[in-house]
Picture (cartoon, rainbow, N blue to C red):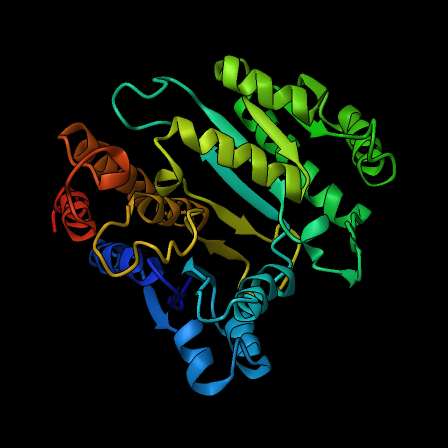
Length: 343
């Protein structure tokens, strides 16, 4: 790529800014190593909304979509905006407007003593299901709609099949088609339709409730799991426990089909955690690992590997934030990781 890779930085709310501040210097580190990139800070979040009434205005979304290559995202959610409208209009606008169908959440524990050797990968559809935020509320009655379309289902499942084929690993589809006959019935039909295209991939399907039980009992019995938006969220949050908790969990979303530029978003999965914001208690590891996933997505494998190794070395050396039972601050944890990158 002759032009710089432009990465939008959206810290958002709560601890989002704190973990972003620790990971963002790794972009400078990548630039020193020869990667041609440009960071584009953007202000969107609760503070901006409260000051201006703007969430993510159309002109800003268009500029980001057409002028950036990726987004590094912190978190959104602020108790001063109890209905969460700004969070929905920012994060869901990015996911749905950029058509980031694929949400990838790996589970490879780095903490000593936490499920050594576990290698799980969750592929979650990221734009539909009940998270489409369509429904009605009436006195004594509330309805949330779940929408599943074949193009989105097919994009997610094709990506999961391709990954399983590349790694020579089995693929499992989690569903509840025994009850959700229409939406999850579509998932089963597309899954069966794709199986002949990937004859080398061992496949099976499993009811999601039984899967959750089995993941608690024997997580190493699974490899690659695909699911809709809702089930994928629950499954990947459960597997985050094997990493050490939500503060350790990374994710990357992307659009495997879309032609315009901004087609990837990296974010930790822990949320804005307003109860600990501003106290130096947040764990930045999920953000570091999310950035590593973004580096790999951009084709920067050496930087991705080095960043993941730096996180592992810091943890091996005993650095822990409070959520991991330690006493190190957000900044101390960030410095421990960055120092192992040679900064």
